Length: 350
Ligand code: FA5
Image (cartoon, rainbow, N blue to C red; front, side, top):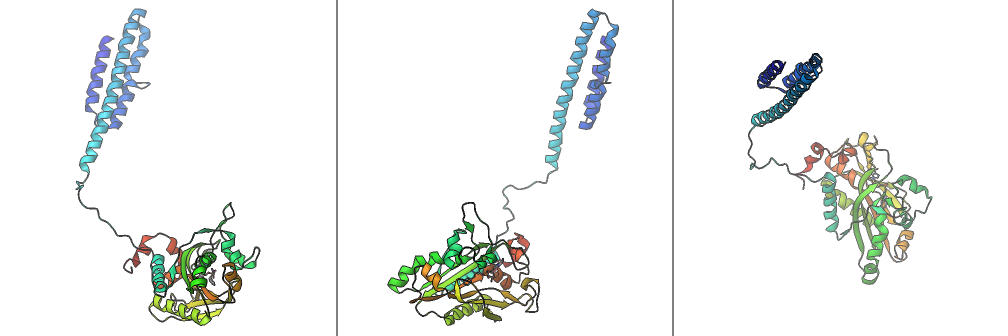
């Protein structure tokens, strides 16, 4: 029987030496060490031996078993190493010092129109202000003549935090802070308040081609003695002609906002369909772009300004819609879509 062990070991070594793939290795393992394998078979034959022979033979079979297990494991590591070497050698050579192929980023279309508007208003003496996206109910509504439970709140349902603050539904939420910031200079030094404040707004909105739940507006206010609707119309016309650099059709119609009196809706003829009607303008041919009006006396009082002495105008330009019209983007949702194929096109217009 010892001879059987020697023969089996020689057979095992011969087969193992010829193995070139892991799958073949598994065949050998099953053939020698599996339930019906040759080494396991030797154990079954031990029944024919005397107790002394059994002990010595069992020991030798165990040695063979351990030897086979160890060699299979070594071969497995060797095959894995060879496989990795083959993979590395088949890789194309590359130069680690070669500069990477880079692609320059581009400004988002909304950033582009925002900057354009900022430059236009800066050149007319307006300060550019920044404001928080998280505001209080007072800033967003109450300071703007919209008391609790006023129906105007329905149009501007937004996202509320557990502490009662909210994500601002319009840039008008900064008006009160702006009046308070500049009123001393207005009253004591006679400096008119002229400020714009672009920002991101949030609304609980059903989205479509011209409505998003997250969009940008740019608010503008001017307060001084004797400010009238003529001043408002002048600034609106100047801004639009400079942004579009061409003649565009606009219309002014009455609009209700509790924080202005009188209030207007300023619409532009849709530049996507030329006014014929399409999904971008809700098939009306017109797009609501920049509501505006004369600041309501209650809002001035809330900002610490005497409405008997001062008047002013305010407007809330829809920056996201302006970007749509300026760049011919048919669907507002593309602007939040982060698809670089869409957004990269405007790189040159910096
Ligand atoms: C307001 O938000 C007022 N605060 C604007 C205002 C300011 C009026 C100062 C008077 C004086 P409105 O909800 O209409 O108004 O929004 C203003 C503009 O923001 C719209 O004309 C439109 O261009 C843009 N806008 C409003 N909702 C959305 C939306 N869901 N998606 C994209 N743009 C929007």
